Image: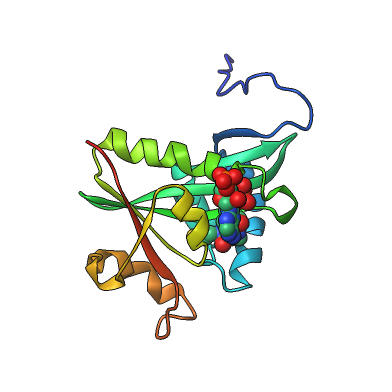
Length: 168
Ligand SMILES: CC(C)(COP(=O)(O)OP(=O)(O)OC[C@H]1O[C@@H](n2cnc3c(N)ncnc32)[C@H](O)[C@@H]1OP(=O)(O)O)[C@@H](O)C(=O)NCCC(=O)NCCS
């Protein structure tokens, strides 16, 4: 039987972080990363099923097979997309990896013709550095709030809504 090589990651130096799209084999580590922060109330939890269903939307930071960062772009509607599940492992923070995860997602939104990217976050200064500005939550479409049913803070949400407007 003929076998087909599905992917061949590029060569890199040991210990060097690599940003790449997520594979199904990454999902359990992604869940660990996300749900650790979710248990601290910093982001929404994700089940393994949710992550497998949406794995094609994710990019990860891979260090010698260890997943130390992840994020995804979730398209909300024709004019709006959200950066979701953005997480960098504590020992890898402050090295530009969060920014390196967000920039390709923002580029992706631009290529798709989506004019606005948003985040619901406590990391206001991080997103400000990427050019996001704070907005009133009520300016965002109702479509944004469909995930809130999974959040323990749905009736007392104190996350900050931030948007980035993209050039066409
Ligand atoms: C938010 C998070 C992804 C940032 O990742 P990171 O890899 O540490 O961020 P970077 O190193 O890419 O930082 C990019 C810039 O933002 C700044 N920055 C990052 N976090 C910051 C913070 N909490 N407050 C102020 N500035 C911050 C950095 O100093 C850096 O500035 P520079 O470009 O002038 O050097 C990471 O802190 C994290 O995983 N937090 C826990 C989960 C979470 O809250 N996720 C967000 C859900 S919306």
